[in-house]
Image (cartoon, rainbow, N blue to C red; front, side, top):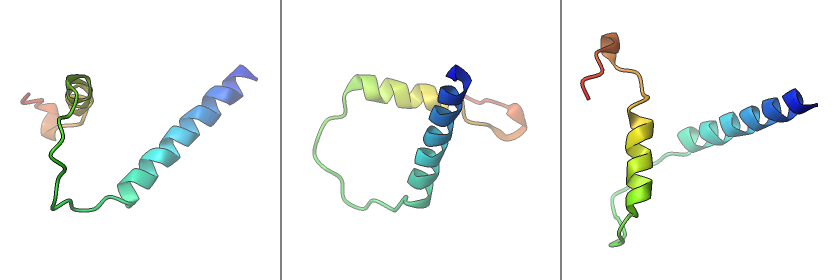
Length: 59
């Protein structure tokens, strides 16, 4: 039963990601609102996990 719960969670996260990718749009206007440092750090951490050409990882 535990493995099924993990699989369900993985599938839901996958579907959430696909929905975000399919519904992306170009943003031309931004709010004049600060972004908390925790969010910025988390996004940078996630970005470093992205693949790079030839696994060069220039960052």
